[in-house]
Image (cartoon, rainbow, N blue to C red):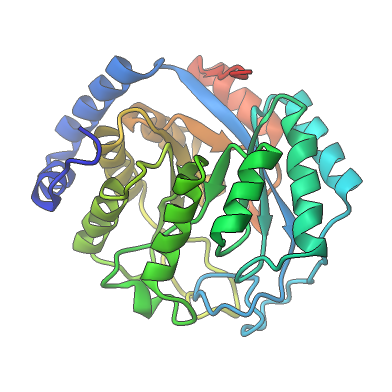
Length: 316
């Protein structure tokens, strides 16, 4: 039923009584995926800070004084070492993020292609988030072995100008279309806690469900307020809001990975368990998620043991 959801249908699901919603999403999860199995991913910032964009939640924007130390594009060998360590710790997907509005051709892009090739031969899924793409760049990334391209749409089209003004919503959607046209799987989700309404959240899910290529990966993020950004005073998103969003996403995207992403380090074990019950089946491992705190490898192993969760095995 993916790609055929009306906005009203998604709204009905989203506004269902919470316990009924969780029950329904759990059943959809069991019918379409292996219950109790969670994919562990690692996200590495390969180029940090000095971004010209004005995303109001981001520590890496050069427009805000957040105290973040900028870092040039990492050396290829250092990235491959990090990928090897991630694989040894149980990750089956390695994601590389760079704080660019769009990646430039020539040296930087060639280095990224080498990183993709190197990670791919390790038997890991390879994901990258590099900003906006051209058709030619997408084709070259696919040829190098890229599995997925992440480009979150963040929120609804209606609310987006209140969050970002240096690019348009259509810029985001065009990049996702270019990745899909190159036969790269799409990873795209949003962030809760950006001042959006429930209707904005429903609209965002409807946009994702209406893409030409249905996302195989839906990151569910809760804002992590960063001092110095316009969203530094944002209140914490409640676990019930996260559960409602995850459950709705699971029903709308039954075959996708719903990734419990930013904000997880603020959640208790009980809160994380609720998210898994609602249909989340992927997490990120490591002390940082780009530049914000994240669950450590040790903490993740302890949580999985407690809940009887099995780490997903590599597919290749």
